[in-house]
Amino acid sequence: MPKELDFAEWDPLDPIKLAHAAHLWLEFRPQGNQVTGDSPAYPVFQRLKQVVHKLNLLGPDAGYPKGYSHVPRADLKIIAENWGEQPAFLYPEERPPAMSLDHTVQAETKCRKWLVEFMKNGDPEKSKSGYRAKAVAKFGVGKRAFGRAWANAVAETGNTNWSKPGSKS
Image (tube, rainbow, N blue to C red):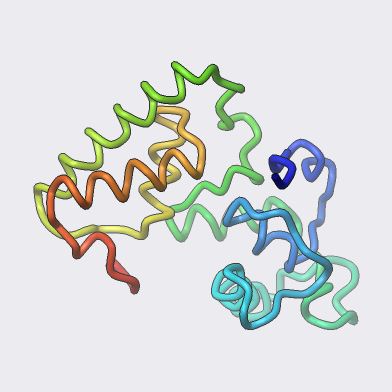
């Protein structure tokens, strides 16, 4: 079983490599210094790279290949806020404390019920990661618990529009 991702080990890094930021954004452990096209972090990496280069937000090593570019955390927070997201690696003060199994099950159940209310009222208004950020702050659910709550809420409501990929706004 892979080791749980501990964001605290990444907290001291500022600026942070863009490739690492893309993985951490999705709560994946960074694998090396690049993001390949088959990585689940690739779409986030491409999106981040586009904004970072457009706004010239590169840190002191701008001469390195793009995957090695470092970006200040403050700039990544601005990007996250503009996207309506709150990735856990950028907001240590918002991370939920470690929970017992009972608390986790209760948080997941509350999260599922909360999602069901949104799903009953129509189509999603933001990305899944946007809802996940809100659920983490509201209920303290982890990524896997949120994923289960999301899937169960879709099954409960039958609103499959919530499981379709693509932009929601």
